Amino acid sequence: MAAKKKAVDFEQALQDLEGLVATMEQGDLSLEESLKAFEAGIKLTRDCQAQLSEAEQKVQLLLEEQGQLQAAPFSDET
Image (cartoon, rainbow, N blue to C red):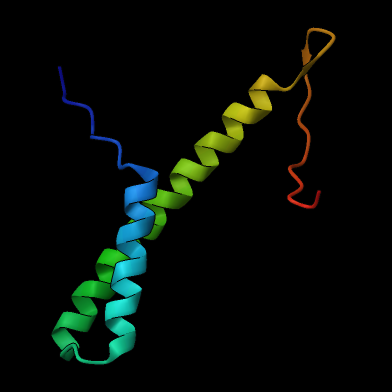
């Protein structure tokens, strides 16, 4: 059997991304270091986006009304 890719912890990935941004904003990195940090940031961003998309799909599946699945838009305005 093929080993499953270890899921990245969302909170840790977000914290790592924030750290990368802070480091890059300082402006002390060389061009090569900046490119490596940017590449790592893109990967972390994609991992976070994938996890958020998966969570959204799970929420939609959990929203049931009279035995039928109902997709409801998420609104952060309360």
